[in-house]
Image (cartoon, rainbow, N blue to C red; front, side, top):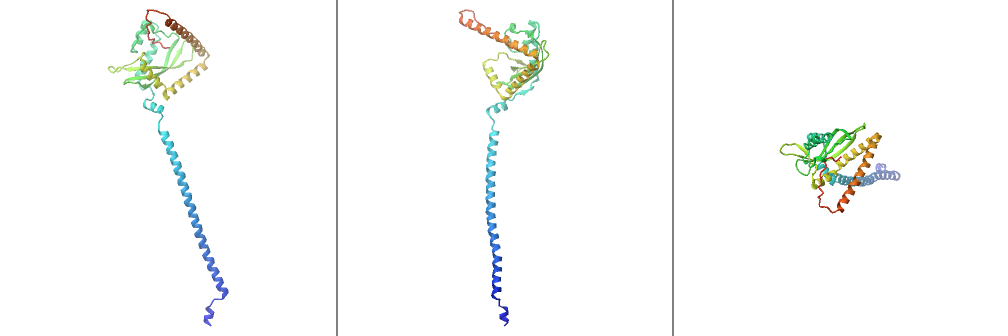
Length: 271
């Protein structure tokens, strides 16, 4: 009888089996979910790694492209435009410009001769009668083609008689330093080779920016003063007439037969 009491009834056995089945099913489902979750995480990690690699490669390409200087950038880096690096050059340019304002012809020529290396024709040095003075002289330099030589961009404010507003100007000069004395002087007739070099460095981005800035300053000055604008408008017309006359004279001389040699002189007054 005791044995019969320990036996499970049919209904109790069914209930026990169902309970066991219920306990087994959640374990299996959780296991499947973990597996699927692991798969998704692996895929996400792989995708992130791929994106990082793409971004990294792209960034590297951009970095190296930006880091590789262009021909123009390299030229500027190797020979940058430097502001007021040589005060002695600025002093010579200042004295050179002011010498053109001297009224006495002989004294003017002698004074200019102190600051240039090749003043061939004293009679060609004319007084700049319409200019009242120079101020704010500032020299920007690039190294020349040879040691102790410089390409100079001389910026200054030019005063014109009877006009209140000054005019921003810039001149390009070739300056040479005497290796014995250390003195610097302006070389007006530098020759074709030097002129080509000067043309080359003038195309550098830093020089072009300087020229654009001065050009804008010049246009702003004219716009601010009607008398100044009228002065340059008249000057432009005069220069065109002189240029036409010069061209006609050159054509006439070329067509004529003569035994008289046509000597070319260097005019120091380039204004």
